[in-house]
Length: 432
Image 1 (cartoon, helix red, strand yellow):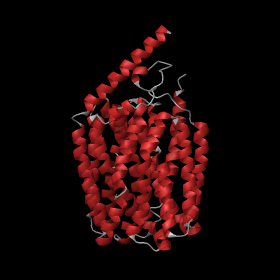
Image 2: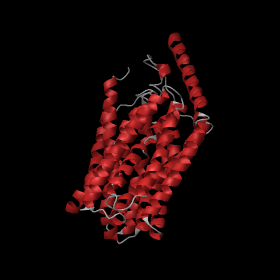
Image 3: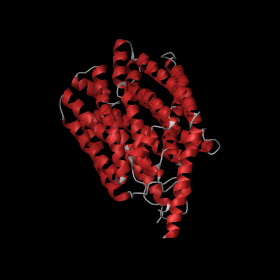
Image 4: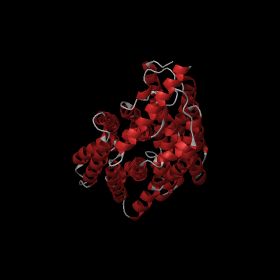
């Protein structure tokens, strides 16, 4: 029986809470760079190694998680991921020296590979013309989580200590594990595809290596993989080093950092929804719509970040305005890339396809914090952020341009496959 439409929004609400609290926990370490570095007596490069460790672990595990999500119940695996999140965060709060902290913080990357299952499950609740908007809503949780982490780091950690903050976020992960286990129901793969509309039963689409190999034959996915490799470099550099840049190179105190970054992060959060909604709107008019919106996002984000970091230190209002505009455009591509992956891949291998994309992303992103730390120690944080971000986004723009030559054909091919499966299922049900 088809799930009531209002229940699918309950699932979105639970997943939003999961992503919000998980991102708070994951990104909290950036605003806590100061007290953590002071306690362990480490420099920028050593701090970058802490971040890179978790990224390496999540990178290695992406293909494994993707395979498991396509073979087994995604809701139960997501509950397991939430349990791992809570447990590993507790471990990182317990240790008392640098090397064990690097190891335990790296272990928090185990659950960071969990999102492909979440996104593919949502794809079976919502049809293609709604997905970018829904993903945009869910991804609002990421910058909001960063904002919550920033507030906890600047206002709560000085009072109760950064370790106690990790105990709190770890405990919330355990609570979410129980909530997801009992509150989220599995949905048949492919249920929301338009070709199956009105059908109570659609059969079972099961993972196969043949279908997984087909992902790599789609030229759209070649360019998605390439932009993924480059696209997350800026995010990791900005996320983990921008607070320190404001404090050490632009002369902001803690209150100035908070009152500057809080509204910028809220604008960034809105950018996910705006980008997703624009992607869905333009997708209804042209199959290239999501790629066009993604291209606009990386181009304008690069331009306004360049302008922001080039403003004089005393021109704080100008700096804020340019950063706010950059923040609006920066997330445009994120919900649209996820939808694009699902626009060209069959339901039974979508988690695998998304995991491979994230694997390639993190293969580059795992180096980003370490590279930024090396450049910052050699020159400045300004140079590290600007060089890595502008170069990466310029490459992404070129890769999106290449995608436009193949996206129409790959989407039409998938729709043909789904129509054929729907026809076969109707014939089977009629014969039964």
